[in-house]
Length: 165
Image 1 (spheres, one colour):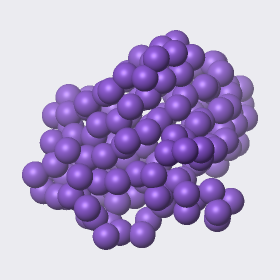
Image 2 (cartoon, helix red, strand yellow):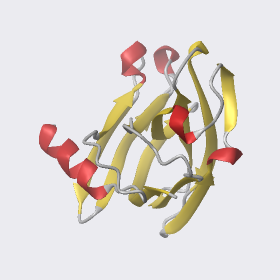
Image 3 (cartoon, helix red, strand yellow):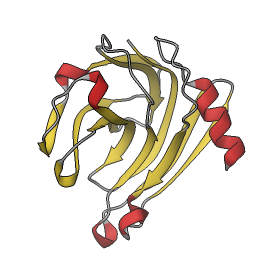
């Protein structure tokens, strides 16, 4: 697993050339008793996510996530290329500070097909899910993730060239 995480981190770059050493990592609703599964495999600059989102046992999410050490205060959003299985996925951003409930986040969705497409997600376009004390500023970002969320479906998603802009 450590080997995979090192490769995952090496494929993701930030436009402002952050010197952080934090890795992207996978987590699922199993942290709270859910049954969803996700694997991430690196090959030739692409991370391939395979798995299943299931709402069994009050679950329903999988994520590829990153906790940046710092983000340029002028960052406007995140961009990446993706292709997959004609499903909707989401970009989630959690903020530092007080949140109610504790798992509150900002999000937007994007639809993939079997062709590579570039996505540019502006932070200003993210919608709140829950209540947060912190305002949406790059310096307040705790975590950025790509998620399969909220319904039963198979995950088949490929990502590359992820960066902040």
